[in-house]
Image 1 (tube, rainbow, N blue to C red):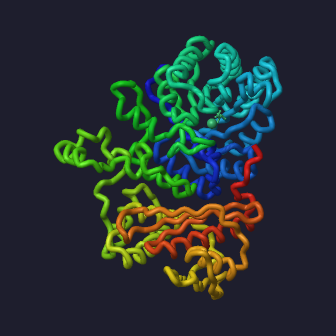
Image 2 (image 1 turned 180 degrees about the vertical axis):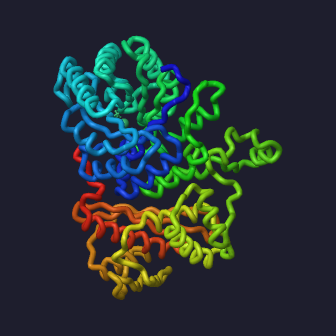
Image 3 (image 1 turned 135 degrees about the vertical axis):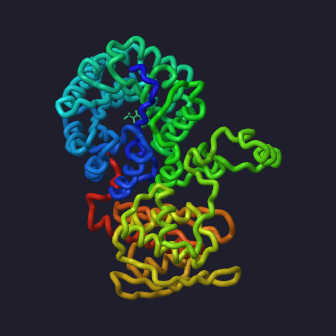
Length: 515
Ligand code: KIV
Ligand code: ZN
């Protein structure tokens, strides 16, 4: 394939979900897949069905929802895995089975305990088995960058012969350097029989911070599919970041001659959604989507910018969907303006959902002079991704300071009935959490707590994310408010509600994967 359009294969829902602490529930995954389709990715890798019942359930829901993009399900090179992948993905408008086996000597010897001949046989058998279900089969050579290049050509040739339509060369452990990875891709492309009939793909990890550079080197050497994740989330140091690859090709198209079909204006909203759903905060200096990516601090830079924007800006923030006219709505804004704003931000909500978020917006607007886009995104995430609540916060009062013992008084509704109590803690948030746990009789362990200001100024909204664990169930809780104690209590209660929900719907739990 010599086309200059690069296929964007998004694996945020599969490899991205393998980030420590990034597990998402089915509703969140479906919401994200709708946004990925809007972003314009070509392939959505929805999950690894053999890894857990929760994964196959999520892939099934995504396959039923996504209509334009291809939906891929991952499977090891075994009939059982492939059957499970197909059972989950078969209702997609454009399904793909993605099967893989390791090809490096170290993986074959110690992990698979198979020799080269057995591995080739397993790969061919897997591709043939997948082909019984669908025309669209991808084969990956795990740890490809540390494999013998001639063996790669042999196994890729055999997989193409067996019917693979995409061949993927991963740098699984993030070991490659850009020039050598580019050379490897060029070598495999030139020496593998049948390469002209299929799409060659690259999949890089970021252990040395080189995932984007390696992916670009692979594309320049002839690969035409890039496997990427939003915000670069993924196993260990993460995967190649979608926004970096897409914007490199967009900004330097004259140099690379390559394009994608991504709607770049959806990058920022999608990045925010991933961060909100996973609870993984984006580092401020992250390229393209970090809070400082378009901020100019130095006087000389600001002066240059005022004289001509392109002195210090290689991309316009609007291109990635970051609106520079940030203030929009306030307490006098009506439903119509609010709905327009939602559409502008990329949210296509039904009437009931608009009304729910609008109510919350009005409450916030009563407390704050200016409501920013980020505030609205948090409200949408809180209201629309919300699951039925067992516990609701009625009020919270905290007493703290240099001399007081931190104390919290909390009133909740539990299944609609009022319950209240008071308690102490090491700090005011600890006091609030202890009191909520006492009133609800819950024993969740708080394993993570993070707080970020989502807009600037002392009246900014604080966004709190907690991670709770109870009897093997894990749930994220989120809360936002201009008062960080209320935001924290909301996040904690949201986490407890999610644990309750998972107790009733165990198949939806983002389980610890068995693989
Ligand atoms: O990193 C890797 O090798 C993978 C494969 C399953 C494609 O994620
Ligand atoms: Zn990977």
